Length: 293
Length: 168
Image (cartoon, rainbow over all chains, first blue to last red):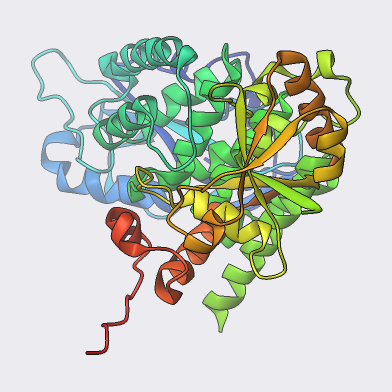
């Protein structure tokens, strides 16, 4: 971890999926989409608040955790461009987790939702294992194997829903089950959906999922759902799925999506989708005006 | 009766339909024109009852518990008649009494005519309404009495419509 200055030397590109980021450590936890990191062509400097939260959580456990040989490594990764940042090993002392100024580099000039992987190292078998703090480190995350299980369950839901008739204004069985998963597993369920939406086998179900991502009332996963929809809007090969993502973002109605929706509008070649995106832009602008007045 | 509206469309199903011949239309777009007894339900657009109002009347149908995005298409009734599709006035069953008076059945009859009609609809603008806007219009419709709030209380409550108390 470097303070101040700017360097991209710390970054390495690796073709790793999120689930592959888990290290061969005593304990390793992935926190999906803890925040957005500024990634640009040049190196940026950014304060990364969740690190502080993590530090606070660690501080509570300091009595159990502090030992000269116990260390924490933090990794930051994005699926979008395979960027992986591995911090130097950190000692388990409170000071190490104060809000840190870290340098984040990038390849493609976009903002990406990032994941953090914490690896707690150096515990011997007899030592008390590091406890995860509810709400900060999700106990249902990949380290426990839940994420693959969720992906499998969600994949089955996608298959089962392929013959469903989706009607506006009536909650489908798929949407109801998807909502239940997100309420139960939060970001981990969203992460599973992200994997499936990357190459959907049934476009109607994928669109229904995108709509649901925007409509589900679950504030803890809102940021991840929004960033996933933004990514889909910009990158989905299917024009209909891009439309679904735009509809999801319209349902969330967060003016912070304005930049992405405007960019999508400028890029879009399908005339009808452009008209729809214009409608979403106007709605978000009205919402922004309401909130600032 | 120069203009008809087909509402409750899914906008995304019509994204890739412009300029296509009937047999080249995406099948999902045809699925948006579900017939019953070979009949398709449409409404007349008038100066007092807009296409948007009819779209909202259908978005408020009993059984719908959430406002949701929707879309509609307005097309020429003469062009429909030219396709050999018979237009018959019948009572509507929405919760908007004024819209119900403007309901028509299109006796499509065959799959070929349904495709012709789909091509006709694909040529006109498919007008989307966002979920938020649908919610606003539903609320207004319940509050101003255009929509009969007693026929869909869950939706009325969902959009937080304030129904004025009846005067004695």
